[in-house]
Amino acid sequence: MNYVLRMRIGHHRRLAALLRAAMPAESVAFLLCRRAPSAHGVVFLVDDVVGVEPGAYAAQAHDIASVAPLAMARIAQQARTGNKVIVMAHLHPMTADGIEFSPADHLGNRRSFDFFHRRVDQPEHIALVWNATVDECAGLVYLKDGRAEALTSAVVVDDDRWREFIPGCLAPKEQFVRQAMLLGSAGQQMVGATKFAVIGLGGTGSLTSAALVHHGARRLVLVDDELLDESNLPRIPASTPDDVKVRSKVDIARSYALEHAHDIEVDALMQHVEHESVLPFLVGSDVIVVCTDNTTSRAYLNQLAQQYLIPLLDLGVQFSVGDAGAVVNEIGRINFVRPGTPCLWCSGHISSERLAAESVPRAERDREGSYLRGIDDPQPSMLAFNMEVVGRGMQVLLGFLTGLFKQAPDAYEQRTFLKPRAGAMVRQISKVHRTGCPICSAVGCGADREMTVRQRAA
Image (tube, rainbow, N blue to C red):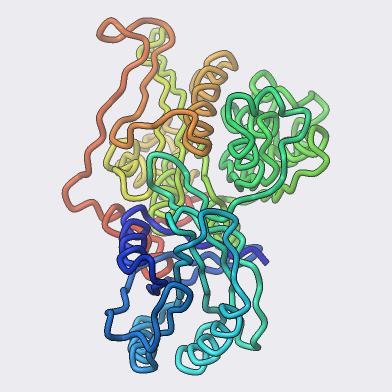
């Protein structure tokens, strides 16, 4: 089972301040989390950080921090009222790195979590122990039957870079040694440990999936509902004429990944991304890369990423041709959205008119005289331009994950391919929250808010 704890930077800062306030004595703080089942485990979304008042300790010194029963009962009551999972975090003030639970911690945790499980009906509660600087931790997930399993990951999702607090221990493979010179050993390891979901395996998505494999990604979720069409052949390098109308796009991408990385884990789903069966796979993903050509799936993923605290990279290449056959508009987009930053709707990358049009059945859209006739007509697309956007998207994504360079949270990148705009081929476009945005108001709420976007009409 994979157990993942996700928090925002504000939660981590408050937790660090509470735990360090009593140094050099040990201290305790609590996180209250929403529980979100995923395809291969559980994700815990931090919702609140609760401190322990100095007078609420039964004992406190440099090597002990025991919370009084009344304070424990109050935390349990708060969790029960909000239907939340309890995370009990404490500090080892004398430990700089290599943090781990002590024998005394294990003994105290078993008593504490036996108490919490009796008071709060959740399948799991969690113990964390932090080092003195609160930038490294170890975690145990306590189950109802008393067993304890390791917490797989604890991350901050919206800082200047992806921050993983449970360090790994594997050295980069020889094939990635030169790449690790740029990313660092820890950065290269992070790429391999991160689960990437690629939605849409057409022109940009197939390149994205392949690029991730070659950069060292070893955990992929691939989602697309279409068989390969003959017009896809020039833009999907791994495809062959024999695949047309026979193999799905996700199967082609999956086969490519397995051929080039025998240790890779791939969940390949031939389904609409909005289908309920796909949701658990997305919830368990660390990053979502949006490569779809329809507004419905983009709007759905925009909401899901904010609610489940998942960074989202939106890649787009668009050419429009006028009645005379000439290109009248062309644009490339690389928009990296961290939870809590302006979403795709705020940036104007989701059209409510197009979303409404896609809710109308295809047969009605194509009917003679329909004002929607033609909206499904294919637009120009070419491998060279897709490669440019995907290549830059990989730089942005891996830069965030590894700390290679910082990403501005309030801007996205817009590119032109054929002629400059305002004297430039590349521009940074500012992002701002739209007043009253229903998506941005639901950051981290998980399943507490229903997904408003439904599967697009057939």
